[in-house]
Length: 70
Image 1: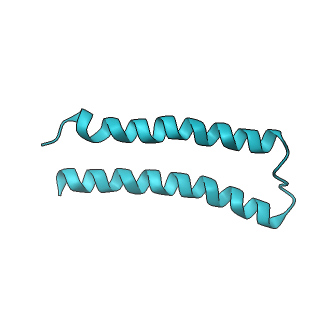
Image 2: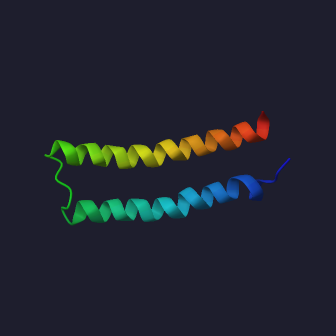
């Protein structure tokens, strides 16, 4: 059985450090007003970016769990 440092530590690093960069970048986009929430296309891409980040985070966790226990 793989250890915690072989399975979950890389996952935590990937989505922890990567998430910090992602959310800082999204904050800068909002702060500089590069995003206009009144435009339908901007709202779509905002949801797509956040949704994509969390979708792949949960998919990756599911696949790690599946590989460890099934």
